[in-house]
Length: 93
Image (cartoon, rainbow, N blue to C red; front, side, top):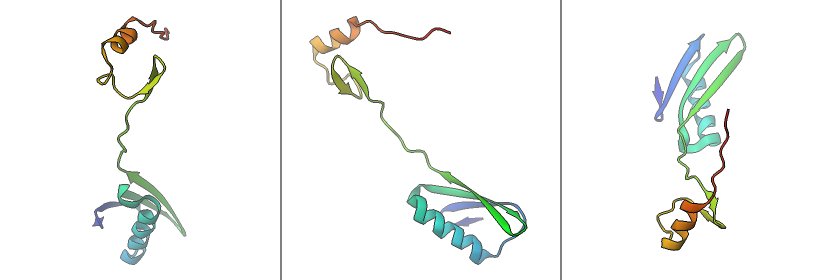
């Protein structure tokens, strides 16, 4: 079932549509447009909700040669050379 572009999956039990719509409204209040779906498990008088959210893209930020950078494409030749020549530490397992 899809309500307000949100996929609803009822895993166990039954619920009236008004109650399901209320869970979607509450999910939108909590998570906004990031809410993609809700899994609903009915256990007697209790309802367990599992929200599914869309992933948020992020950019990796690193500290290189004293600067916080996301990518190296804006480095001039000197800074690019410093980055290439620095000692890079890694973990061995």
